[in-house]
Image 1: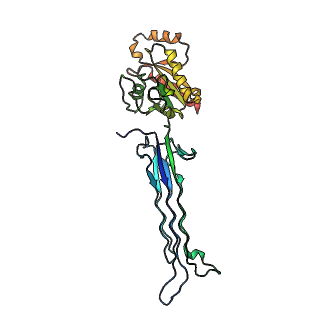
Image 2: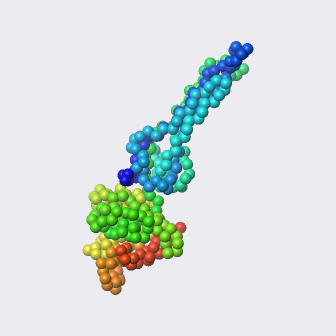
Image 3: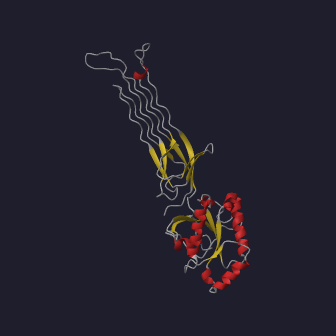
Length: 330
């Protein structure tokens, strides 16, 4: 299985334009014809396309040069050189293309199947026929082709999803994702089972489809690099709403909630402005559901739902809440 890659630096070089030709018309009975050198072909461009079949950037190689073809030489008889072939690179939707030397965001690849020109090929040089004039009857020179664009870029993937799930390690995020979506995340009863972001598609009770992103667990001090750090939080920047997953057997549910909010705010205050629900997981461990309701009533938190992904308890309720939040944001 290829390694999950969500940021990488590569080099681009669009094609160089082909040189123009220095040539003169020659045929039987015409010993000294006029200039007929053709223009060189244009260099190939480099385009990027967002392709939904790509889930990460592992198909690219760090610092590799990705080059388009150069234009061909012009030829005699005013023959134009062939243009260089374009290079089309496919990336996952949500990939930012950033120029490394300036930090400029060149393109945010959100729209699928729409080619975006990133590096332009050089123009072909003019042949000597172009320079013929009343004052210059026999030009003996032609233009070289222009260089194509050449620079390094950073590809930075931010997954596109409607809902983001955050929680401590082993909070039941992956179990829920597997239960309600088509995703097949790795599941285990130990911290950091999820080492890469997972996305699943869920169909709501009303028949609408939504993408849910599950990111690796957050621990206290994540913003300082503890655990897996916050390197994966970029993948919930684009979501419409959040689900805070907390183990129902947590020693202090309110503290855990505040911890998650605090770590998110250290990454981006905007994450705290998104609609959310607090989801208490593993409700199957508490047989008395009335006790769960009493416990929720004693908490100074709102928008709380207790669920069990194993037996389906209240999972439909979560899906209805997701639809409510996403619809309100549209």
